[in-house]
Length: 330
Ligand code: NAI
Image (tube, rainbow, N blue to C red):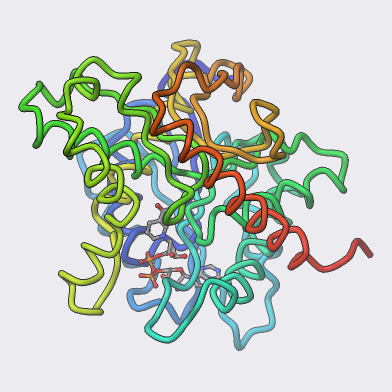
């Protein structure tokens, strides 16, 4: 593993609403020596243009770009070979955001195919890299992609769902309610990454504990529905992109710091045995080999205990949906 400051990262879907600001923040991370960015030639902004723009930062990071021209017949694997070779971390904000009239099943049908072509290429060219999946629905896409790695005899714990935005939101909302210093707040958010499967554990944080009892339920609900706040405010013209990029960069920084020997702990969704479910989001410590420790849930309040049962019921079905959507092994 290279020393701190010498890592290669690839962002797939880098021309998108999340992809552009995420690539910017990653290019500014002092642990990143090379950033490869990838998108389709049909992306709203040519990925070569995003790379040219990023390459003018007065930072050491070298930026390269790779576009897949759908007309040329080039496969994702062919285009991604150079981008992924030597990568330590691959971030995947490629995919279609939910549009009006689309339900979760429609979204899964489209996005699982996009995730699969990228994850298949990771398996081929950088099987030791951590793959951070932002593409929704995370609750279903991650189990499917982990299953794909398992079928290939690879480490399925390299496939990680990025749920950091839930933590970021919970921290900010607790700051707003309590006035505690925002950089001192760290609310673990466990379970999954959609609606009622998102479970913030306010009781496990010093500031979170001080939230008045009559405000707890509303705060819990606000974290669950925060994505809708953004979609509504953007009047249907997009979902959370800037806050997601911020959260994605926080996740990437934790993984790279860990690889460089400075262990960091973040909540993340991956294969897990902390509950009876095969996938779960909980606190995870990243170290020199990637995922070093998956932490137990810890003590819960009565409200959190009750919510956990509902979370598990909902999440179980969403995990199964993901695995069932994966084409059978050939
Ligand atoms: P966007 O439409 O602005 O960007 C998506 C990018 O992916 C586009 O540049 C598009 O060309 C690219 N793309 C599409 N198919 C591709 C393929 N086969 N190969 C490579 N690139 C491909 O969408 P946005 O808003 O950036 O969202 C991206 C994804 O992130 C969506 O699935 C969305 O639901 C998800 N998301 C996840 C969040 C999380 O907390 N994990 C939060 C917000 C969104």
